[in-house]
Image 1: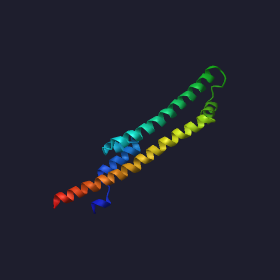
Image 2: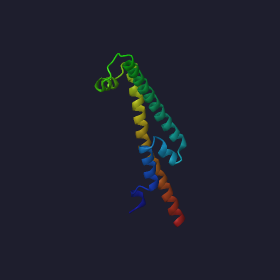
Image 3: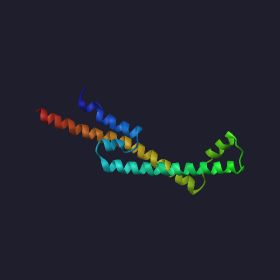
Image 4: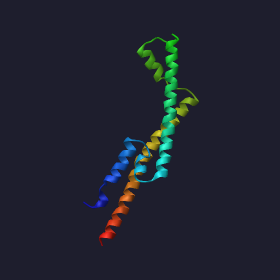
Length: 131
């Protein structure tokens, strides 16, 4: 099978690292450090915001339970936890979620693209050295 039609281990590793570890991990593996840093910062920033907001909402619910404002009932707590924020908070949460998802998707697709480019260059070097 021609080398141009198959995925090398390098390309597979880069895509898998981006898909399952963290956005930018595949680029770091491919030595594209600036892109890795950019994707990692966007994803980490979005995840940080999501975690901070989730913890704040959890703390608020816990304080209401301790104050006796809401019953200690799993169904009620689940309902309160799943209620969506309103206004600018909801927009910020949606923006953060979208940023993380886009960074992850770009990380996977671009890792594949860059890996294929590097594979083509490596194949050309091997062909020239074999002549």
